[in-house]
Image 1 (cartoon, rainbow, N blue to C red):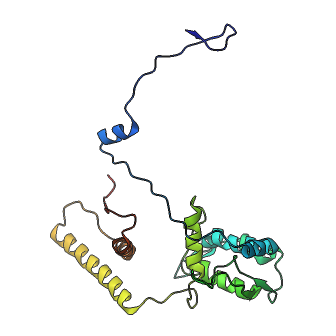
Image 2: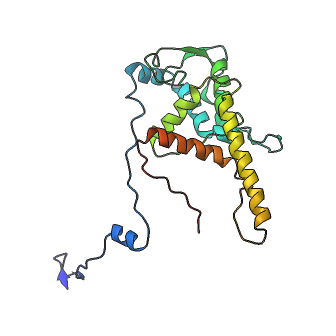
Image 3: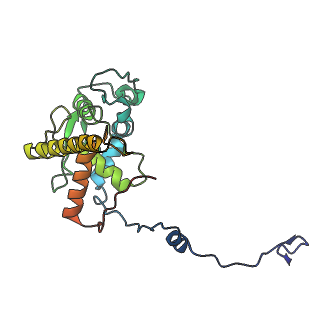
Length: 242
């Protein structure tokens, strides 16, 4: 018993014990600790002109950020148009007092219209109608993008810059023919292998690809980029949950 408060109140101080470290416990349980690597800075600090433009066009910046945050809720992801999508009030420009479709705004530092390069930070004036059309084509098309919830500002900025600076017709980017053939080859081979396994082992428990074929092109791209870059990659481990 040790007097910790000096006023007659006694508090118990247990004898400290030595416990194995978390790393040792993980190794004993068979788990492998991963190394956390810092993400590279995607771009330098924004220029003073861009920061000033954001201050002067704060309502427009809020409007653009609303598409980055809530655009996925209004995306047309149902090809049969059977899914009823609720209206998203945050995507209405009138909510930010943007009512004149012909009024021009400087979008430098607000919308990423150019790839990374020397001419990236040049002033560019767009009408509100063109801004709305560009944001709808980018975030409210046939694909839904949800990335602003990320705790990494670098990741969210990379997604916004990549999506908004692409030059795509109608919000859809055309794939080169060789990439289309590669995707078709992956999907068709996986489908053939799945049918073979079903015919060869009809009574054995197995995990098929039904509904998961579209994941193959994503994994193929991920592995290809990792093999070419090799910046943060030493090994790639794939497993199924127990």
